[in-house]
View 1 (tube, helix red, strand yellow):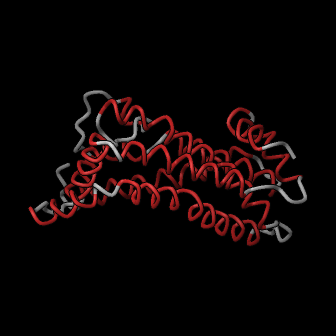
View 2 (spheres, helix red, strand yellow):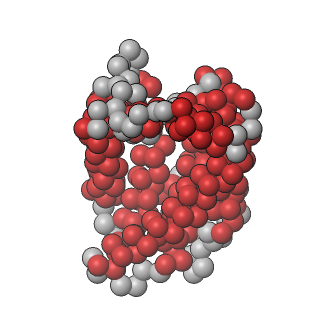
Length: 234
C-alpha cells in the first residue's frame, strides 16, 4: 500500500485510481488518514477561533443562524453565545470530531447497509471505512482553504459555497439560503464516495454520483425551506 502522503495526494488528483487500490487491498489503511484529516480540521479552525477576529465571526455566525430559523435574539441569549464563542479550542475539537470520526462511522454504516441490501453481501466494513476516511481529506482541505479567507473577510461564511458566485443576491432570499448550504467541496466529497461505492458494487459511477449529490441538494433545499417557513430574517 502506498504511504500516507501518496494516498492523500491520490484522493485529490486521481480518486479513481486511489479508490481502486484501497478496494483491492486486503487490509486498507484508514486510521492514519482519518487522524490527519481530523487534526488538520481542528488545528486550522482552532488557530482562527483563538483570535479576536475568529471569535467575533463565530458569534456573528451563531446570531445569523438563530435569526435565520426565526428565533428572536435577546440579551440573555446573546450574552450566552458571546461567552461560548471564547471557547474556540473546544468548539474546534467538537467540529473536528463531528466532521471526522463521527461522520466517517455514520457514512460507513450507511454505505455498508446500502450495499448489503442491494446484494453486495461480501463488502467489508474495513474497506468502506478506508474509503470514507480517505474522502475526508477533501473536507479537511476545505477547512484549510477556508481558514485564511475567513480571517481576512472576518466571517465564518464558507467561501466555497455556490452563493459566493452570486454577487448581489439578497442573502435572506430562499435562493441565497439554498445556495449558501451547497458547498463545492462537499459535492466533491460525495462524488468520491460515489466512485468508491460504484467500484465495490460494480456499477456505473455517474448514476451513483447523481444520487449522492441529489440527496445532498435535497437536504440543502429542505434547510432553505425550513428557514423560509420559520420567517427568519438573516
